[in-house]
Image (cartoon, rainbow, N blue to C red; front, top):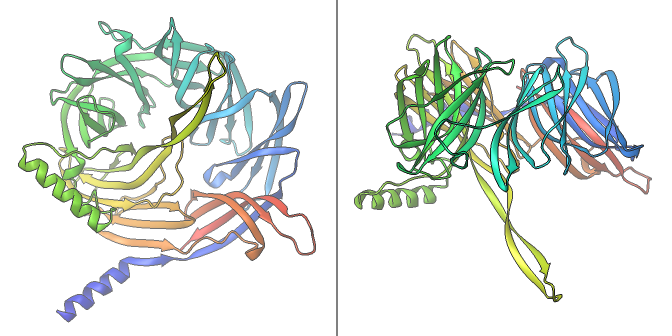
Length: 509
């Protein structure tokens, strides 16, 4: 027995290790009163863009500054341009070496799209301004640099109507299409998401229909090509009674695609499981549903006591003949094809749930009486863990693992924290960062964990002189991560503290 335990500990020690950090380069610039709201966008080996806007305005405009740095933080060039002071940054969309940033104006019927292109190695910029309805809500965007697709909702005759918006950058025009399905009232329709086929670059708007007769959501898809032309509209045929919540589509050929995502029972808001399917044109070859409770390792991120409590609840429900559901939402990645002689697919999805906080506010009636109320306010998405699973060509699950994400910050948009590096001969590597540490996990295609690394807490530099820091860390390229944020630094002999914006390049070994 001792030999077995010792061997097991040796194997675990070889799998788990501490990642070594090499602090390659640090850059900092003084935070002066002339520019505010610094934000970076990384472009892998092409470097990084630092975008800032002026604090002061001149004749109703603010100056925006775009600095392009290489991977060693050497300044390549600087561009400045003036934009209406009422614009603020909203959504963004990144594709290859292009990034598009949506600019909004409060209570004004105009939007702008700032496009930054590094394809040629140098910065090429363009701003497209178009008129849109004043009462327009925008929830998601995707841009290929020429056409920007927006998923939104507009107020029309005292009712909100979902719309698909296409902005043509070359024509500086916006085409706003109400979401319509023949024979279905608009109030029963809702757009859920935008997805993109990796092979064809076609854009799919996922539209759900609330079917009152069956008490489930029926999924429809409106397909556009990369030039914004409508190609097709089809319904996802499914007799399972499940409601598809979201869809990620990976094109295999001109006619075949793998679809993955999450589903819910009837009209439930949160997802209760994941699915994988294969389509040939509009026909489904197969679609397999996997409730979260049936995934072997889905709850492993929880403390052992909580896992046991959930297992007891599951058994009680089963004795009563009822289903035990776990409600999560999943940010799905595109599936990875596996060609190791066994064929199949790797699925990665990051689990999260919305959080809310209580907020107090007061109202005053006509008589001057003040009343205090409490309302629930959205407070970001809490990410818990990710599931990595392999399926065979028929969609049968072969194995699954979870990755505990340790994410403390809560983004206000659906984000994918994990970066995936693929080795077609060996397996996949999942890398992410949280709480100023870097985590690396490697999986073989047979489902074995071959490496589990965690770094020490990242040092921001400047030692104990740092009085306050706010920073973020993200994967950059190869084995490099980028840390960026603001610091308040106490200088010896100086009364005032120094405020800086900094970027650090870190290599993980």
